[in-house]
Image 1 (tube, one colour):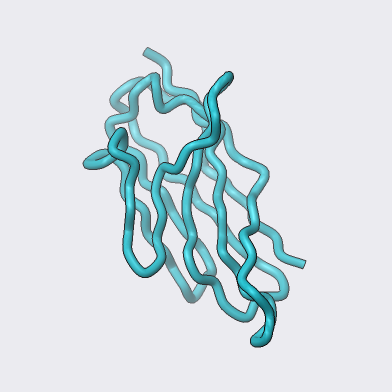
Image 2 (cartoon, helix red, strand yellow):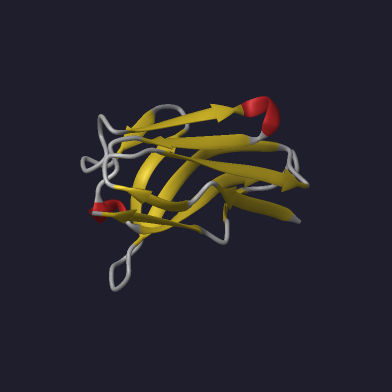
Length: 119
């Protein structure tokens, strides 16, 4: 089994900062890409930032959010600065995991963490 657990969400005023963490544990041979996605009420889930062979950001968060990884801890972070009310959403972590040396790489999702930015 593979577990993906996010933490760090909460309520913050506009202009504030939050740092999200995501830990991947369980039967893991390797982790390829890791990333953050978000889903606001009534909207589709969208990519926020990914870290694999390269780092990618949604245009809406460039210059404000920073993704980083600690591979030794199977952890990915999302530092969110200059938060805006439109950043309010449930933030999900996704990890591309190979469980065994001979297995394919599959994506695993966490349960999500709520981020609410008040104006």
